[in-house]
Length: 207
Image 1 (tube, rainbow, N blue to C red):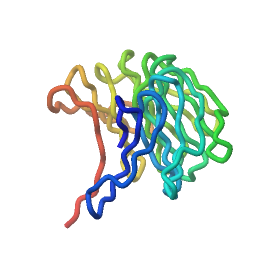
Image 2: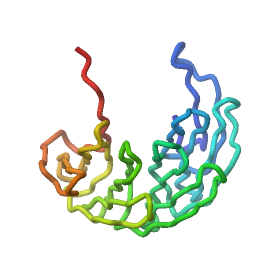
Image 3: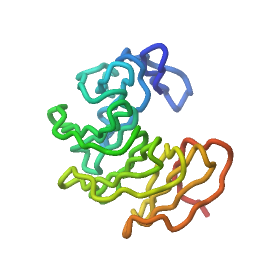
């Protein structure tokens, strides 16, 4: 759990629902994501333009990576070799090589990128651009934008279905969710939801 105003990450034991460690990170931590193998947590620090890498075995910061301005969202390719970080302040996405913890590419996107999600096959990253009402689609093989999809006003959160067929994007300022067909990169449905939606997650139904 990132604690924006205290510049820390709280580690919670889910068996006891208690905090077992408090990890100092950079200034203004916002986003956090785990590598697929669970050995590292990457934390975006919005106010100092860095990403803190936490070793989950020791709950210590083992690397601090400079990225773009106001880093926000972070997501990993399924093989864990790359992390994609949205930089809200300079309209870019930083690509981090997780073996070396260095930035290997900086990708220009649209205005004020926020959320990021990667398809299950690892070939595409979908980035919400809050102030341009669009989603940038990044080809992870070339680290270039291959499509820009118009959605609702102020898109923030994004999630992709387990089969990779659809991306769901929540649009904060018009209270909708856009459904993107990832095969055609077009919006196939717009769903009215509650007021000022920000987050989205896709689960499975147990029967």
